[in-house]
Amino acid sequence: MIRIAILASGSGTNAQRLVEHFQGDGAAQIALVGCDQPHAGAVQRAWTLGVPTYLFGGLDLRNGSVQRELQAQRIDLVVLAGFMRLIPAPFVRAFPRRIINIHPALLPKYGGKGMYGHHVHRAVIAAGEKESGITIHYVNERYDEGEHLLQVKCAVLPNDTPDTLAERIHKLEHLHYPGVVESVISAIGL
Ligand code: GAR
Image 1 (cartoon, rainbow, N blue to C red):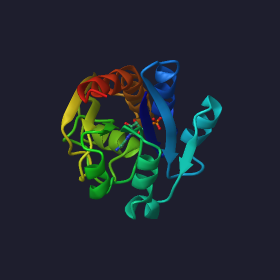
Image 2: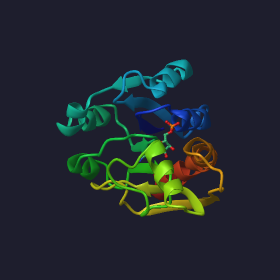
Image 3: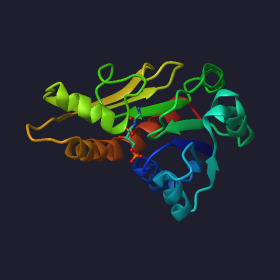
Image 4: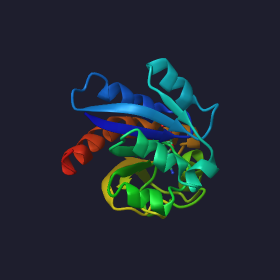
């Protein structure tokens, strides 16, 4: 059984979608939802879904505790779902091509430190972009720069607000993320 750890910082709708997708799957399971924000919706959702949670702070991530915990729990694949912190280089090296992220824009545009959630949608609208979308990619030691697995576009409408654009992007994320996680599992032959 492939053991997946989801790391999340926010509302957790993608985490929930992934948990539901893999529930009852004979080959892969969401072993835990890790979160750096104890009051995040992601923690509530994991509790409701009966998935173990693992709470940690920024220091735990930087000093290697999170990486060691995931190794101790025999995690095969790490899936970032609205996780806002940088994954340290030793952590990336410990999980080669086994950490993936979803970003709510068409990278390399609108990526990098501080570009997450609504900040991204605000910037896209402010720049007058006609299209945005999602990027699912491997994680390396720099924000939003790893090799792409999938990009899907959507329109930015003239009267869009960050909220309406976020809703359109979330729908795309929920539609595509589980399938990409499945393809990564097959690609690494777990
Ligand atoms: C998602 O839109 C995800 O792409 C984005 O945060 C949102 C989390 O939503 N991630 C980033 O911005 C990472 N840089 P969720 O908590 O409802 O899944």
